[in-house]
Image (cartoon, rainbow, N blue to C red; front, side, top):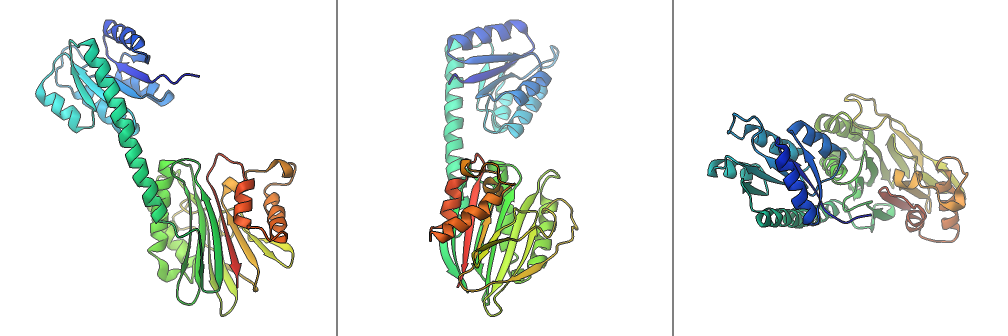
Length: 362
């Protein structure tokens, strides 16, 4: 295991690549080399780099820097966390300014000074990591603002939620909000994890909160969210979502389950499951959304959770079928008058996002 930083050098001249390899090795870096932009992209897809040093010209009879700028654009768009440093033997202030404008962390003219190269790489990596840390801190604050308080109440409902992202940002979403005559609630899971999933989570969360006028009609709200999510995300992205609406006057929960792990309804010492009623959101633009309903009584509990829970079987439940351990453990926690959300989240040892939402009907 090594904590050395890794740098990729891209140049079409073998002697320059070898000189850089030796320089970087002496400076304490792990170095890879690529003789062309094409090979650079192949290596970048296989290995994470802290910095990439790129030549701006590859055809001997060109000095425009177009190839280097194209490589810079590609690396910057695909790997925004990697510092890219431009260099060329045909340096000009115009090309330097253009490379910086397009996202290069620094610019080194040939012939170079070894000390200057090492300084530029060190500074670029440090700056990018500091910038990334600031961006992640802001993203975490924004994500937290999209979520309600971990404990609260709405008409006819008390709730408790544990939200535990796998990394700095999470791809799970949950919400509980009042609509005047009742309480709407949801829990969803975006495909993937990390920053990309968190951004899609924010998109879906905004879509649903922007459609609160349909909260008392789960099927219509889910249909609207599905269409918007389908049109605003890539084909491989989707979301599982359970959306419910509780009306205290009728003591009925109306809900749709779009491919989400079946929540557990605890009542009378028995655990019931609210299975999927529709396909996942975002898979098909005009997917049919089916709504169903269940009656509840005072003291009944409804427990929603993400697949970080359902796919994490604790040692004490190894051998149980699928996610049936969730029902068993939830019943045990209820019998001990323990906090169900906290108990399930603690039991679910997972490298995925973990979210558990417990609703108690009053």
